[in-house]
Length: 245
Image (cartoon, rainbow, N blue to C red):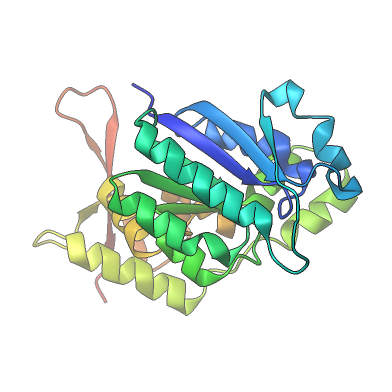
């Protein structure tokens, strides 16, 4: 059964060009029963958002900027999030912003037992990322969608968003496998993926050019993969371990 999710978007901070990929990605995690976007809709900078709100059934929340230099949109979104929390109508939140001002909000929602997913651009500060159960980069889901395009210019831009698998990432993977390994060094890949997510909320195979965790693991030459029959024989269970030196 899908969990009920509230989507709260910082309209002053997130470009409207991500909307298609954003909504498709969110649908993987649950049923978005509340969809709201916050901003000062008298400002011309939000005009592009206005044209797509109805298509995606997103409710615009007006927040005037009463004081210059103060982000009234953030405050309105935080207050609304707490109202939604206490209503008891959802099981989790998608906070869509690249702003570190939502770090405390994410922490508070998790303390209340909510699943908290963050979504923003790569410029998002680390504290906000760490405060979420999972954080997804908008550039990566955009790249995943555009990878099917024949437009060479798009492909060039997409490649710039792919990270290299650095020694730091490999060590994170090694340590996680060791944390879960049996006496022979094997660890169930599903458990490895879950623990990686807990250790580093923005860990995502797509960040490194892989759609799934298995091919990412298979690309690391020091690791080996073992596929085993499930008890019912309906599907394969995938295990991973570091090769013996």
